[in-house]
Picture 1 (tube, rainbow, N blue to C red):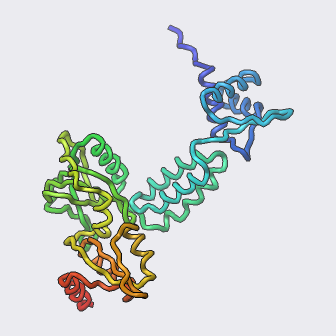
Picture 2 (picture 1 turned 90 degrees about the vertical axis):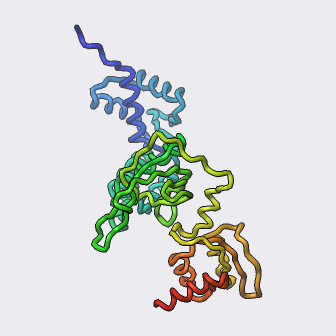
Picture 3 (picture 1 turned 30 degrees about the vertical axis):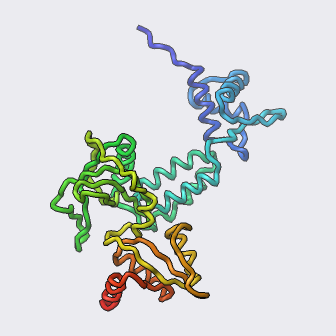
Length: 323
């Protein structure tokens, strides 16, 4: 039985598209002769008439291919779905994300650079400092994030093991490798880490887990515990300070006026504040009363003071005495 013939027309139009995608932009215009040579190199024939017809079909399909009229018409692909500044912004975000491994960062940057046309090699040089940054070692986080998103969409729970590091830098699973079950409500990216927020069976309530510390994740067939009407993810993120564990507490801070930018950056414009005098204002917020919160207060060098409640002030003083 003879082999079926190749769909030459379909193959040719795809090669024309690939050549335009990889070799043309506003600053790199190509001719019909350029495209014809490329087709010949890839074992496919074409001439001025067929190639021009293929380009017209691609335009009809919706691709933004511009023809610059001249004695020898020149063509380029004008729109790739993203503008160059947008791709550069996404590349910088990938470079900066500590939760991504070096390998995954390079893979994503290379894929993103494919939207930039023939000059993408120079854009790839923007990734050089990735090697100098502290990057995640857990390759599975990339897939864990996808699984959590899928579980949220399908209203299912996820199971996983959770680990921390021992003094010798070895991983140790919490509670002897206990399997946690979580009804995920949201993913939050904070301080260069991803956190999964949801109802935890183990905690019998809302809990947060760093995704890069979650291992052996699976989506179950169990229906997730519905999110309460009174629970707001945005409020939770604002109120549970810096995503570190600690007793939640409503505190009052006395701040010098110059710190208002820092307060709004952290808690948003809706945060409760009051003018105290010409030089100070007060702010009332709900935070996790943890060492991280106390360290944040100290970082302002005395320009911020914890004033209430009394037991929070005493805990702060006790912590300072340890230093």
